[in-house]
Amino acid sequence: MQALKDGFYPPGGYRFTETDGTPFEASDVTSLVNKVWGYRRRAGLDATAAQRDVHAQLCTRSPGICQEVGELKRPEPDKVLQGRVAVRAASLLDGRMSKAYRFVDRPEADARARICKGCKFCVDWNSGDSCPPCKKNILEILTVAVKPEALHEGMLGKACRLGGEDLSAEVWTKEHKLLEEAPNTCWRKPQP
Ligand code: SF4
Image (cartoon, rainbow, N blue to C red; front, side, top):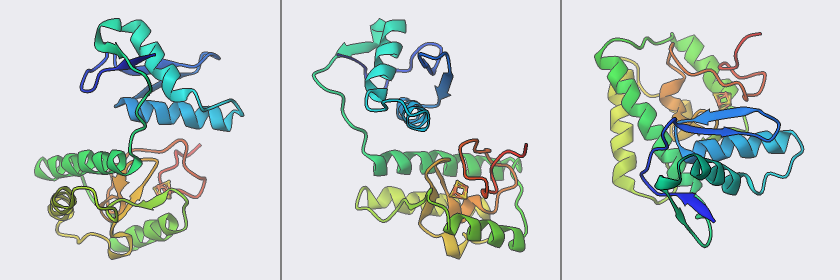
């Protein structure tokens, strides 16, 4: 079967169109597979072929950046989440430097943390044993990025699996991604 080569960016981006016409777009192939997988699960469809179908469609569009593989490697969920947390940390730091990001007050951050605490998408991102120096570096970046506030102690080491951000920093942010797929109680759910 065909699979996208590591490190290659498909012309036109990471996009997939479901057989019912539903379009998906993501910032990387793993996120794209996760979106399609989640959609199929919710729609009662067979989600097991999501990874194969996404690669097949990308490769039909751009055969030059694909290769034949015996089986598709399963991404390691911990590393994927850690990578997403790192990307957001860098963006928060950029925002701090350019003053593009602002923060909410303590009561608001506490209220958000309480909601996240009870949410099934609130998961540990730095408890595994992959790359301790990387994790330390991410935490240092986040600490600088949210100053003068401190990382929210109730959310230390927690990430939102849907959004892919460290929550001890994210609960302070005024500018953040909205999450269509989040539970209705989520503070990042778009308002109707
Ligand atoms: S989905 Fe919303 S409530 Fe749940 S962990 Fe993510 S940000 Fe928090």
